[in-house]
Length: 135
Image 1 (cartoon, rainbow, N blue to C red):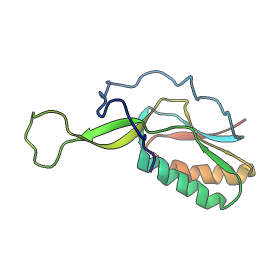
Image 2 (image 1 turned 45 degrees about the vertical axis):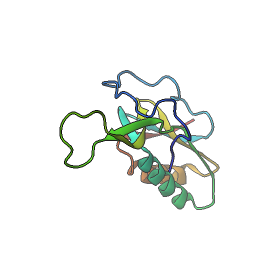
Image 3 (image 1 turned 120 degrees about the vertical axis):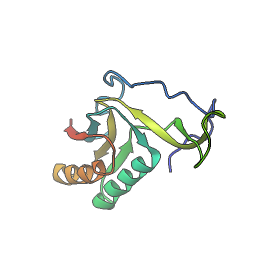
């Protein structure tokens, strides 16, 4: 699963609402086809891995896949039946914060029909709405 090797701060502030559009990472850089986010959200490292596996399984050994997001924000959770107060919970998992327009996956080396189907299968695993884009 994707997670940072080392972080400066173990717990990050949630930071309120994620607003605006993605300018960085909003264009295809590596491949000919991509999966672009239409919503704001936080992609869990498990979701990214599940989508990657679905895409890789469909294309088998053809083509190349790039993951354009990395989960680097830790999300904390308090244990079950813990009373209110007593500080922030322990880090449980990592997320990648996503803005609309962000390219999540890119593909190359396969025909459009295969890429479209593979990325559709991958997008079913994600918690944000996406669309297929090509260069």
